[in-house]
Length: 172
Image (cartoon, rainbow, N blue to C red):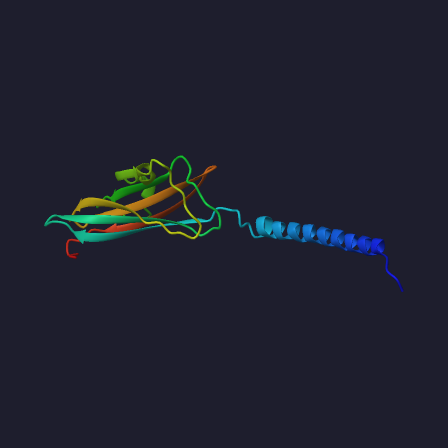
C-alpha cells in the first residue's frame, strides 16, 4: 500500500487544525476558570492596626501605631484618591455604661499616611507593608481608639480598628 505525499499533508493539516481548535477551547476554559470562577483578577486587601507603648518621659508615653496593609490577592493594587486615613480618638473618662459609637468620639489626631509618598503607593501581590505613626501622649490611664481606612477606589474601602490603654503602671 502506497501513501501519497498529498494525502499525508492533508492528514497532518487536519490533525493540526483539530489540535488548534482543542487548544483554543482549553485556553478559553482556563481563562473562564481563572477570571470568572476563581476571580484571580480581583482585589484582595487586608489591613490591620496595632499599637505599642514605650516610655518617653516621666509624664508622657510614646504611642506607636502600626498600620499594616497587605495584598493577599494576585494583582497589583493602587489605592484610591482618599488614600490611607489614620484617625486616633480619645475615649472620654465619663461615659455611661452601654454601647459606644467609636466614630462619634472626639478626634485627637488624623492623617493620610500615603501623603508622604509623592510618587504614588502601590500594594504588590503577596506583600505586607508596615506604616508607622508615632504620637506623644500623656501617661494618665487614657484609652485611645485607632482606626485606619484604606480607599480602594470605586467606593470600596477596607478598615480596621484597635483600642489601647495608656496605663500609669505600664513601664517599658
